[in-house]
Amino acid sequence: MTYCAGILVQDGLVMIADTRTNAGLDDISTFRKLHVFNWPGDRNFGLMTAGNLSITQSVVSFLHEGLLNPESGELDTLQNASSMFRAAQLVGRCIRHVRDIDGPALEDAGVKFEIGMLFGGQIKGQPMRLFMVYSAGNFIECGIDSPFLQIGEHKYGKPILDRAVTYKTHLYDALKVGLISMDSTMRSNLGVGLPIDLVVIRRDADDFELNRRIEAGEPYFHDLRERWSAALRAAHMAIPRPPYAPPGA
Image 1: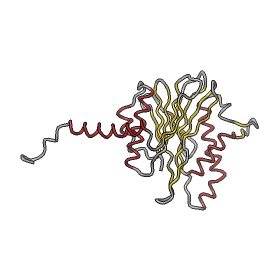
Image 2: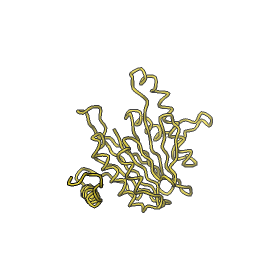
Image 3: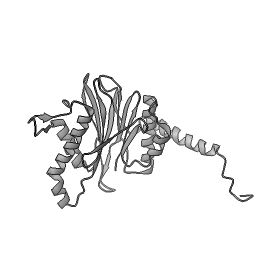
Image 4: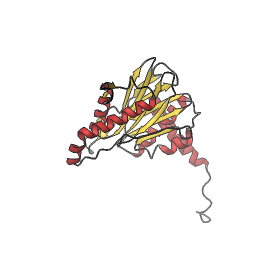
């Protein structure tokens, strides 16, 4: 299981991903699901992956190496993509390419070709954008009215993002709320867990502003978890009980 969230606000982009993968209760491993592609001063991209690990790793490998363009005979890469839209199209093409290569064998083995990806970033002089790319290679784009996208086990963290994030949210408040969303997911689903990888890309910056991993026992994340739990308990205690109970109850 996986949980990844991308939050696109006025000041920039936050991308957060867990690292837990499992093939059963006794087969739990840690793999990076947040991949960075950056050419400082020109373009900075983040890619988060969910689904079958072998498929997503193959897609990421093709994105690093490039994909042959049958019309020009040259390699299409994230470095030479002319726009974020074209870069997202390349992600979709790589997914379809992996499906063409491995799809029949996976189908024979009874393995579904199911993945999801969040791809975002900025090319210098162009708008910052965030996309969700599906197993078929098609994609949708994050918008101002709903400034976040999620993949994986998203249902536990979505209500927090719905209530707390707007396009005008401060960049590091967006990071804070994203971490609360991750913590809520981890508490409700053991298939999502530490470490957590995250990047922050400020709009029109030359490089990533933050690219780090939160390990178990990291002081700020531990404090955030405790404070959020205490705030929830205080909030429900401050709300009057429903007036529906019979007298004396």
